Amino acid sequence: MGIKEQVDFAKDELTQDEKLLAGLIKAERFYRKNRLAIIALAVILVAGAVGYAVMGYIKEQKLEAANVALLALEKNPDDSSALEQLKKNDPKLAELFLLRKAAASGDLKSLEELSKSGDEVVSDLASYHLGVWKEDGKMIENYRMRSGALLKDFALFDEAFMLMREGKVTEARERLSLIADDSQIGAVAEMLAHYGVTEKTEGGE
Image 1 (cartoon, rainbow, N blue to C red):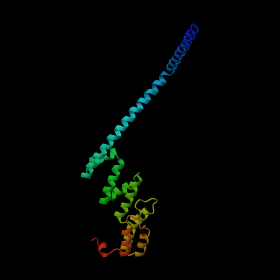
Image 2 (image 1 turned 60 degrees about the horizontal axis):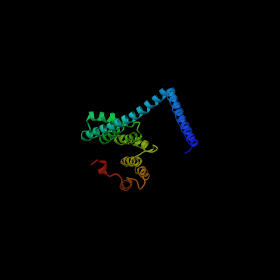
Image 3 (image 1 turned 30 degrees about the vertical axis):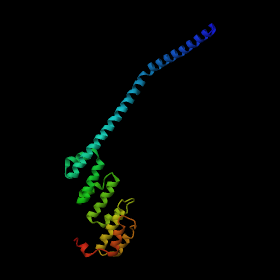
Image 4 (image 1 turned 45 degrees about the vertical axis):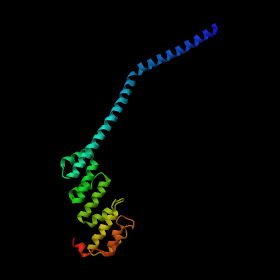
């Protein structure tokens, strides 16, 4: 390599070093000027990552505690301590447990409270069971007239059953005709429409 080439090469190297140095100086100036903002952003990112991890841990702990409480209630439905733990860690699951218990035992007070639940499913099912336990035909009719009633066919069947007990066979059959053949209770509804309510059924034997 000739002297001229060596000089040109050295100039290029110096130019690159100068550009690098200038870049470093600019970066340093930027950091000094925005140091607090950069540190704050770093802190926020770290805090967010830690917070996310903590929330995940808490959620997992709540789920585990709710499962333990539910298992305890399965063994002893009257375990008030387990119920409180379930309410604390999983309020929706607690409402479903209370609904199942109230619907099985006919606890009208609990069903009344649950019918006002903010959970649409719990509210819907509680309203249905409340009408059935009260044997209130009007309440059951109002329930099945709701838009999106989950147990509409069951309500129709209950209405028909009560109407037949009152001797209103024609009205009862009209209700039963509204139940689709492929419904869960289609076959039972057909039997009720055909045979009606026997004296044995009315006597509760």
